[in-house]
Length: 309
Image 1 (spheres, rainbow, N blue to C red):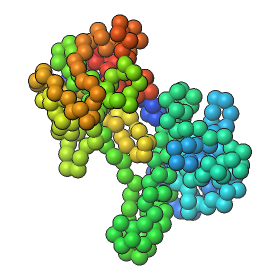
Image 2: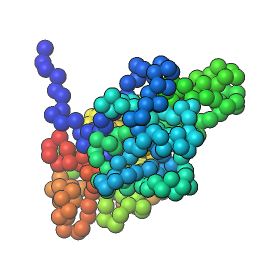
Image 3: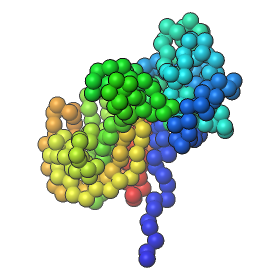
Image 4: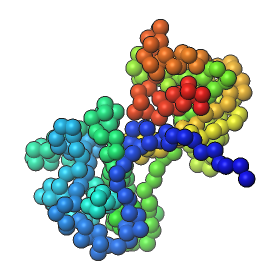
């Protein structure tokens, strides 16, 4: 039997939010007594999340703060999500507000810029994504979608139960296909009006219910550029906590060449040569065109293709 051809590098670990030191310890989430004891331990840390901001301390910033801070705000375990263990110490996510941060004298930072600007250590970014996504889900799913009654947090925060009708509700992740469509020595890149001037990136779109990743790639590319895609190959993924998406990065084989872009989605869409993309990533393109920064999965899809992937 031929050996399986695994990629030499896990590209997902190179993306923003793609690394963590935390052991999620999922097998202990059902043990309410163990989680209660962990919550009370003085060395337990919390990630305090206020919408798109998080409490930070120090320079470079650290997002894990003492659990005593959360308790001083009156937060209880019924509001805390168990994130896992780091070196045997508990980690929880707790909601708070910017007003409460000011009262405590706690500095805060924007979740996106904290990671994208490289101010947060790469192996802490996964914990940030986990905390922000779960806190958002709990705040937006406090009531049962079956009967409308208030639900309660269980399983360490990975489930909400309705005491009225018995329904169980689980955190959701929204899958997004992001793809580099290629044709021999060229690829398709687009830009939206909100992008920085001169920046081009991969096409992307949400995966719809009942749709495979491959078909989502084909559909989104067809809708945005009118190009038909054949074979699809998965390359990497990136957690994207805005509020709770997973970017699924793929290469797509172009079957047609003519582009008719969707003007509602894209400001421009065109073919680029491999040498052009290399120059864009290196910041040496003669027209000043650029690609996404290394924080973004699109950068790594483009870089892998440039390198011959």
